[in-house]
Amino acid sequence: MTTTPIQSNSSASSDTNVTQDIYLGIDSGNGRLKALSSNGYSVRIPSLLYFPHSEISVGELDNESSHIVYAGGSRSDLWGKQWVVGREAYIMAPDTHISTADDKEAKAKYCLELLLGAAAQVVKSEKVELTTAVSIHDKGSFKDEVIAKLEGTHRVGLNNFECQLTVKVKSVVDEGVGAYYELLSTGKVKKSNTALFLDIGHGTIIISVFGNGELKFRKAYPLGVAKLYGAIANNLQMRKALKGIPGNPELIKAGIERGDFIYGNNPRLSFNFADIYKAELRPWVSDSLAKVLAATQQWQNEATHLFCIGGGVNLPGIKPALEKKAFECLENSEWLNAKGLLKIAQRNK
Ligand SMILES: Nc1ncnc2c1ncn2[C@@H]1O[C@H](COP(=O)(O)OP(=O)(O)OP(=O)(O)O)[C@@H](O)[C@H]1O
Ligand SMILES: [Mg+2]
Image 1: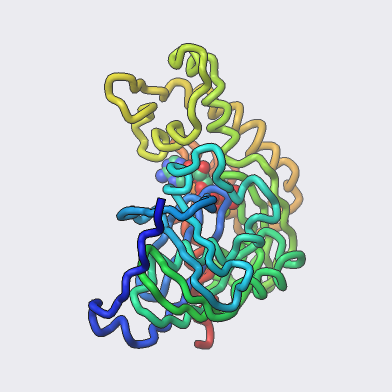
Image 2: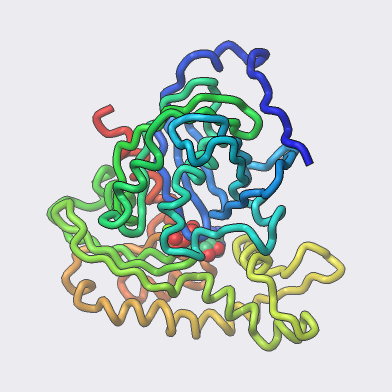
């Protein structure tokens, strides 16, 4: 296989020749990387990476996939390397891709690889100054490593577009800080309030408590929505429908996110699994959500606001259960962290 040559951009429109200043907020989740850019892009791509052993050629990619070639620059360990981020990483290597959910250090280890995956969707100029704010699950442990890995000048091919990207890190914050900052900046909470966030993510459920502008408490439980998808995959009715084989969590996720509960893409083979979802939702709520809430009861009484964020808020049937427990499910729950991170990146610009 051969690498698709990086195209010279000389034929591109003249605005590609000026240095473009871009601010980027990146929420790198276990399931998906969410990023918002100051030039108006929303990036939502699976947190998957694939480093091919030999050179590859990629055709036209969708907006959930990026192909990066690192031609040169500050990261000498990446010189000459190429990788794929997002959906295409799963398609190219269903069994051997890297998921940032697999390894606690992966989000820090691959932070530049992931950032460039997001940048490929937003960079439209040959020379870019990119100022970013990123979140990490343990700022204390990983902040220095993340800054060292990200900052510098990188000559890269981003989906076959050759450019030079200078990365500056405005801030590395703990996950959840972005959402808090967003609500502070929109006046939804005041600094003097105590706000508790329940973040229902793909890999984790995280409780964060903020007050006086500070993170007061944070605990992550590995009980996210992936557990629900796993339970549905192994449900007896599912295995019966698939002649003894467990379901594919990716197809289950797709059916739930579309809201039609159709399993699979082939109309001749697909079936509706709404009943299986209903049967498995209740045990997941009581084993995961309820357990996390019970463990943080003291903070719920202390807090003036209880907010629910993360993509899991969109699971059909979940909102009434959370509202019964006095939680407010916020609009655009999946994007709140990235929204706040973009504002942090733009602070005092
Ligand atoms: N519209 C939707 N309907 C149903 N479920 C959804 C919808 N959108 C997202 N989800 C689900 O919400 C879950 C959490 O998504 P989110 O993007 O918050 O996770 P993450 O940030 O990648 O993971 P983590 O926070 O654990 O690192 C995912 O499992 C996803 O399938
Ligand atoms: Mg998340």
